[in-house]
Image (tube, rainbow, N blue to C red; front, side, top):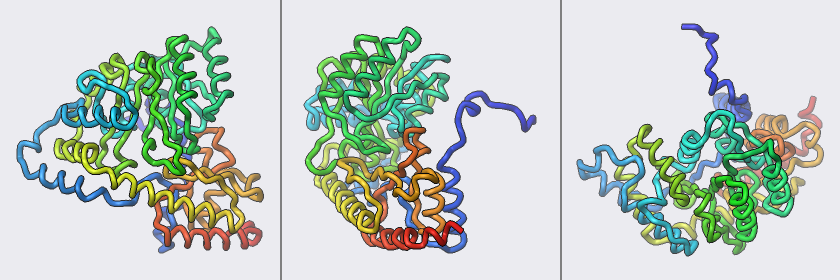
Length: 399
């Protein structure tokens, strides 16, 4: 076989920035170093017990081990429909406007494949979670970047892009609360975006994976709360963060019937859906007691408070996020000149603390790092001590 053979879709993907830090992290651990890992957004809390119990009960039935259905069992689609009514006061038809996905990431990537032709243009905020631009890049699209601050500048720039005859866009990707920046959008912002996209005939793909991880009383809205949004929008969500179920791979797409139909058709060729006992347990998550969601949110808030206050105390000032399980931290002043990747590598090598370099989320992420709130309070306090030592000894470490 020709080892030099090129694969077109793979060639479209840039080098994976995070791989360099991950490789260093693995090397340090192989040497016996204790790395405090804030790098990956991988929830560490256990899945609530009543959800696990439902999985265990269901899995005992041999019939549940057969193939499921690619769009998800009806009971789970109804549970998601009920969630939208309860949380957002939005009516969605579980038969035609809801599909179960293998996490929100799979759903977005498969929808990109379903609706995108080679050369189509898609607008994606920068910085962004990598699947948002690269799901479309893999499908053959060209990505137009826009700054991801949900404000009047975004509206102005979106109008400017879409009014250009050279920028006939197929879709706009949104993600609020945002990974990595933690920003929250308002319903008024969503209304303006919907009006613009209806005017120019642009689909909206909204990712609300962090809609239930919010603090300080600022509750994130759904774009489907905008009355006309279902004409053009589909929204992706997940149980991964809300119920601490990342490995279960349960997500949803909800909204525009044509987009749901397209995703349903392409998934019917690709998978048989999630394991049925997992789907039944997901119903228990959505329909069962919701105190567990408040408890998970409370843990993240405590971690946020300890980390932001502690790092600020030792000389690393950062804003306190109002949502998500991340802190989007500007590099300390004396490290701005080396960039986010080099800073992340030095922090790992000398401070034994792993973070995600902002450049990995796009060029507008340079000058920042993303810190995941995925270590317990004791480990966070240890990280604060490590960072202080790293800062104190930085001049020596440069040699």
